[in-house]
Image (cartoon, rainbow, N blue to C red; front, top):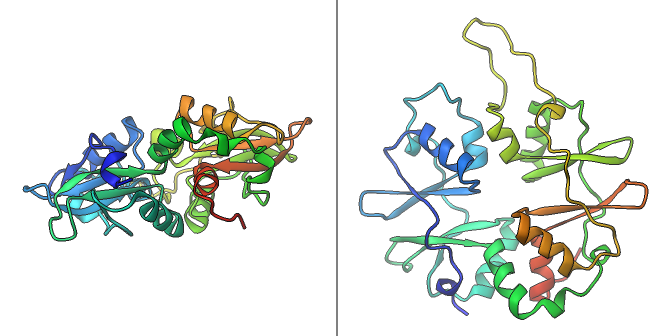
Length: 265
């Protein structure tokens, strides 16, 4: 299977000279993980992530896309082997990567996503997902509490390379907070002084977290969990016991590892 067979050709892109505020709106409103940046000939120049956007205040309108974009960690071509590309994405902890025409022709063609790979394999190889989630879930879960300050949680996400964290109170799962939640809340990271020279009072996680969390029990199959992921468009599902205590979490990487036969640490 080649990358061109499962890439998202309709994934939006943005030009290097457009404003960062437009990039912010696209990532926020279309729930994008990355936004490829191209020149006037549609040649790939870089990408913008949610992390990049969170560093830009919505009021700083003069900043252009080329001022905040970064070089992709990895770029695939349309004729690359899908399994090789997916394994490299797992190695680099990337859920989405830009795709170009070839190693010589950098014309932007779309984005390869773990989500797209899962959807394709779910139709043909769902038998591989019959295991209980307890066998593939991460048991050492990094969490936060409703009282934690958003700035600190954002820094923790950056340090651990996480796009979302379960929110717990006395070990009981009470919510989840993601980079997208922070972006949609209008938060700017980190908090700087306001124009009046005063520090804004840091917001707490309770102000932006989602409380209607989709969670599963350890005995639920991976197949059922993936159905939730696909239907709701979510990248991670917390696992809790009978008393509501968080015992693990399953994300798209865990599912992809199972589908391609990678070993779990």
